Amino acid sequence: MAMAAFRREGRRFAPLITPRPIAAVRSSPIPEYGLLHFTVFDFAFLSLQSQYATFGHGLWLPKGPSNLLAPLGVRSISTQIVRNRMKSVKNIQKITKAMKMVAASKLRAIQTRAENSRGLWQPFTVLLGDSPSVDVKKNVIVTISSDKGLCGGINSTSVKISKALHKFTSGPEKGTKYVVLGEKAKAQLMRDSKKDIELCITELQKNPLNYTQVSVLADEILKNVEYDALRIVFNKFRSIISFVPTTSTVLSPEVVEREAEAGGKLGDLDSYEIEGGETKGEILQNLAEFQFSCVLFNAVLENACSEQGARMSAMDSSSRNAGDMLDRLTLTYNRTRQAAITTELTEIISGASALEG
Image (cartoon, rainbow, N blue to C red):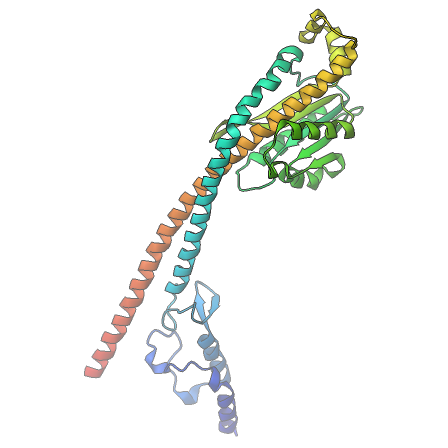
């Protein structure tokens, strides 16, 4: 009865057993028992080995055309797996090199416009000054970031500075809100500061920006927020590998007039003559709106330059890392191929020696 049950179990597991003769595998860790000493569990183990192959420690990979492994029992990497990995790394390297060239061409187009826009806001700094330490009750932090990633830590830097400003300007009788320009800053600030976000604007750089478009954005921001001080956080472009996190402050007309009456640098406003029928308050209102649009225009362009420079650096580093990985994979492939050839030669020589003996 035992032999009959054994024959029935053998017929059940027979299709799962590898067609390669068991006795021909010298490197197999399974003892070369006689066929009559095998049990049902031995057949199950052999069926698993015929369909899966060990890779590393404890990892089993399915056998197939893409996973042609070494002989049964030999723990080594398939040359086909290494070739596929090398192919994927080469494709990634091509993509990163192309992205670097695209970023370089965009940087050249934006850099000239950013340098020319600096002449718009500098006269306002001379006239009204830049007072980042002014103490007001209503603060609005305008955080400028990019809509796309793969540009290093440029967006994280802007968000960190914005959070630090929020903590610095908050208080019992003070209110601080966010106006977010860019998808990346929006994604980071929505996690823990969602209730403080007043307005979000994305896809700024979908089309080339000009002053008219930015002035419309500035009007939209001024209509939707109440402020005593607008604090614009952006990255000022220095070079391809260098950008400086910068904060520019634009005060409301009431605060400007109050600071002018208190003296200091803003006290020089009284020395200017006002022509026409406009009052001092109306002129300060127009100056504040025009100053904000000019500073915002420069900040968007400076941040765009910094973004493309950071993307160039990131893609260059990625291309070099892909090259290093490709070199290591090539060495692994050559070693694996040589090991397989050596194993086959050893088995051939061993078989020939056994026949001669």
